[in-house]
Amino acid sequence: MKTLAEIASTVPNLRPLKPGLWQLINPCRIRGFVVAAGFQTDLDTVPRLPFLYTIFKGRTVRAAILHDWLLYSGFPRSYADKMFLAEMRVEHVPFYYRYPIFWAVRLNSGWITLKKFISPWS
Image 1 (tube, one colour):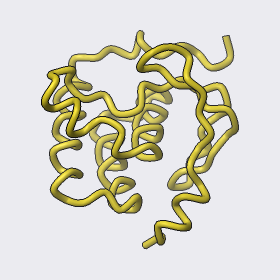
Image 2 (cartoon, one colour; image 1 turned 45 degrees about the vertical axis):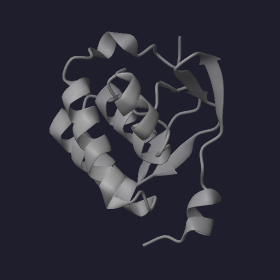
Image 3 (cartoon, one colour; image 1 turned 135 degrees about the horizontal axis):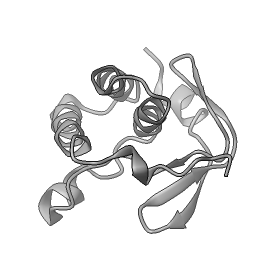
Image 4 (cartoon, one colour; image 1 turned 60 degrees about the horizontal axis):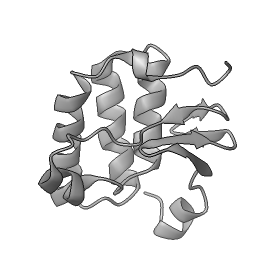
């Protein structure tokens, strides 16, 4: 398992586009996948219920980017969700946050369509 220092040195460079939407400045490698520069993500898609949103939003970056990239690339949602959970463990997200975040994203991403993704090459 990676140390926190190793993870910190590999945090993707993001720039905000608008509230809730970020763009990857440089390509980054996460779990063997290369996420292209210009890719846009909302990071972790948790329900916008104030209590849940405050507790869970922003606790993971790499896992959230990977999850959105896998969905955008056409991987099955079940695979993207498994990789999301695994990467949160690598990022040292404590289990008492990791599993609620996983289930919040799992439930919420079922209601989100891939239309929200804008092609990074457009």
